[in-house]
Amino acid sequence: MSEATPNTRNSRKSLIGEVTSSSGDKTIKVTYFYKTPHPLYRKEIKRKTVVHAHDAENECGIGDKVEIMETRPLSKLKRWRVTRVIERAPKIGGDAA
Image (tube, rainbow, N blue to C red; front, side, top):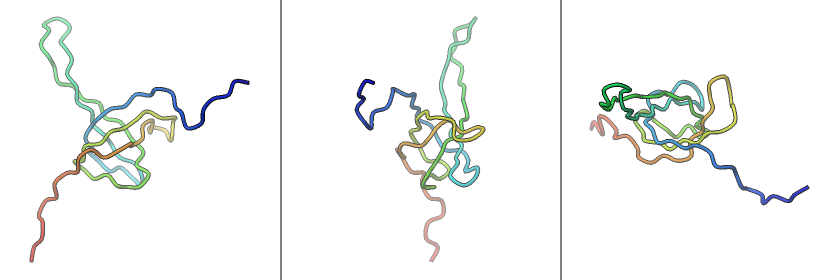
């Protein structure tokens, strides 16, 4: 049997998106926006895809910009996991003293 180096992974898809919902314990919904040309008129159309992602530490909040990576199926809908939080959403309200 060939010897493989440990801690290596195959190349997997990764996306950068915005957290739109916290839909349960350790689960978030990430919206990924992209543009694609219209098939006939060639005007760019805005599109979005919503994916469920695994957030192991419950560290993401709504509005955060996160990087997610494809992984094995974790549940019925979860096929992605959070690799890092790129930018935190600003807190609304602040200190009311």
